[in-house]
Image (cartoon, rainbow, N blue to C red; front, top):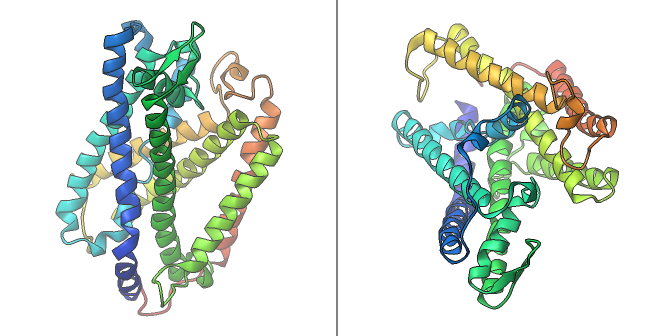
Length: 360
């Protein structure tokens, strides 16, 4: 318990202030889609919307393998709260309830805005990079602005003001989400390093701030270096950078899940006597079912990400936006960081050490 006690005391000091970052980010993430969806109703009353046929919701195999990784990405990070289970008042009650609330909220916050985008913009105008922004710009013309015959929207007056406010909220949501990832993942990684899965120096906790400073600096440096190199290699092309960055981010997560989900069953077998703050009900049969399904979906997502168009007659047709007909460049940009981090993980594993006696 030495590790939990060490992290708990420091994290409680930090949480006095840092919890406002994810809290305000989550609030913005709720308010922005709600306002946008409500504005779509007003836009429909004034200008009308184009219909969506039921058949358009039936995905082809090509669409299916392209969407699976993105759908999985919508739910990543669900394991991070478990890293702080010892700080909850009643994790056995709180974590299942939080999962249920988060699941319903995610469904609504994804489904409603996406439906709103589809009823406002023609399908050919919806892109992975600009779809939501273009839809918001078009919808906000009801507050001030106009839409040209070619679909180009121009905001003015109150529409322009609301557009700028929503842009600021959108940026804050992105910043808060990234900060939440850094705080949660950094804490888990620091704990793992202190427990022997990596260099102990990476798990060092600041006595003054209670923050795993070294891990935070390393994470920030790696992120900055990856972003800079990505922009350089893609020549500053926003669409190409977005496609590669999203693919690499999801790939690294689902590759980690290929180890995390089987570990659930492995720990149930090897450490059946371990006292757990909360436990998935249903016994070993449910544990095996959950692990197999989750690992299978992660494996499918990893394959579809690393080789777009997997299992299709013309795989190059499934390449992300910005890389049409250029698979070699796309694969190089994706595999380079994935292989580099895989090597680092293998080195950490080889150099890993068992925690000292009494420190487990």
